[in-house]
Length: 431
Image (cartoon, rainbow, N blue to C red; front, side, top):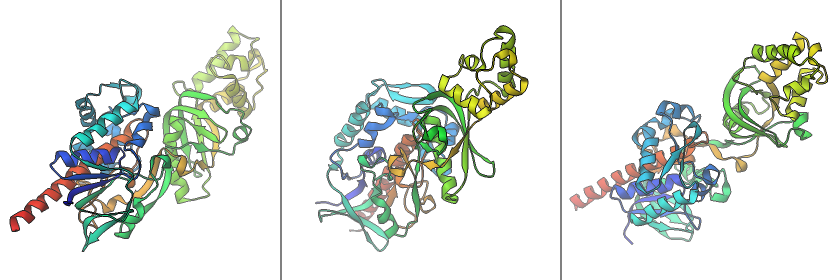
């Protein structure tokens, strides 16, 4: 068997894009995947619809990458969200933009995207090896020479792209396989931690499941540390669960919760939920006081139920220590202010997040300071490249994280191919 120019390990979005990019650059490419089919994680992304990217301008895109966004600037500049959309449209996939810039296939089916990109891998001439776990990397004098497969076979290659993902969603094959390979070559591993994952709480109303299943739309969730410093404010929908809160806004907060707890394991964190972010505290209080004239005999609880769910009203009144059975004519300014304050900043203790295995995205991974951001090549081992979530990079859901995977995969594949081809041509000339 002739040696390959590029071996890509991992058949997720980063690996598939890396293999295509390397082959289009003219390299002899092998894609090695331990599972029985490529594109598993891609197939479940976006709720099964595959949110292929986000259409927001690059500055806004970067704001939605809490995990080492600056390191990714070069990759995103060379293969942007616009390039990603053009790539898939070139494969015959019609795309549509939805709220908050999220981009989906018109079919609303991830299978459409998976089939198109996997077919492109095969038709481009990449050698695809399924059910083929890698045991370790082969290195000679600080240079990649190939990989050793678990079944005992060696594959020779001038370059290797590691695109094995992190530890989240292990059923798709992301089980942290590459971490020890990188560490064996001297790379530092930032311990993996969960991001884009539901938050947990020990509040009585959570433990007793009084709000379980209740969803709120378009709220602001703010995370506070024990020094009352605001860590982040995220806008979107939330869902109360029997363990805490989930939903897009809560998931985006999880990075900041995980990071705070990594710094101090017993940190006392809390969130506040602004239930009506488009209205000020004074506006809410004044509207309650104004209702005294229009509906003097209506109860405060019934007035609040005009805009808010019944279970939520019961909880808000409990927290504000105001009696819901009070008729509006007897509601004082102090009562109205107390209710408005809780509506604008409903408090909740946060104990942490669900475990990494239940996270959508992995934080941590191979330290980015040891990787060249212009090529994705290791600074410690010649011919070793990284792509996607195996590195200490991560972004929010909503098309941002998959954009990072495609962008870094494209750059790593191209860079590896160009280097390998140049080395092969140089070797041919010297013969």
